[in-house]
Length: 143
Image (cartoon, rainbow, N blue to C red; front, side, top):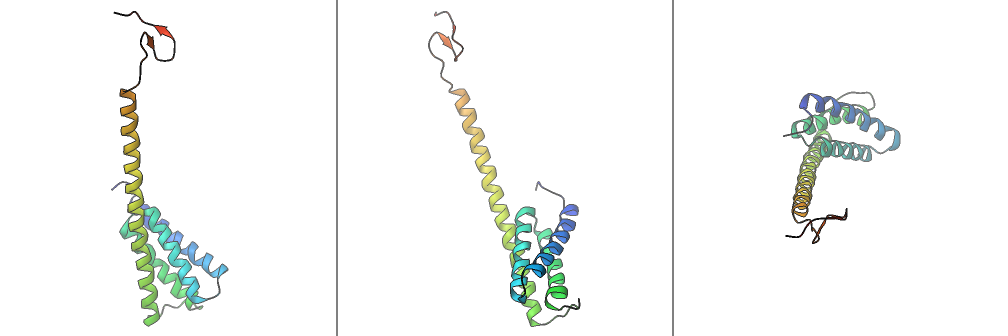
């Protein structure tokens, strides 16, 4: 699979998770809305990364930050029923974003190949007018 290596994607996901939590903390006051905003950020990163391991690692890091700083203000990690739901929501966002990124990538590459094939076919079928070479007006001798 082409793209960025995992060694680059996981730290980038860490930065993205921290940025999503900071953005959620500054813009929204409700806990559920904050976690939803972080899930959207994880999904967007997963669309860009298109790597399942990096997306799940980003979701896990985002869960740690969301639980520690957005849900519990003191920075403590608790593990209760609500935390499992948040972890599952972030994992689903990572999986869905990664799958959607893969679909977009395949569609773009197919479109690129089709365009290339059309360009090659058009170059082979370039019309040459009788007694003229292309649009330059150079006359060639008729046989």
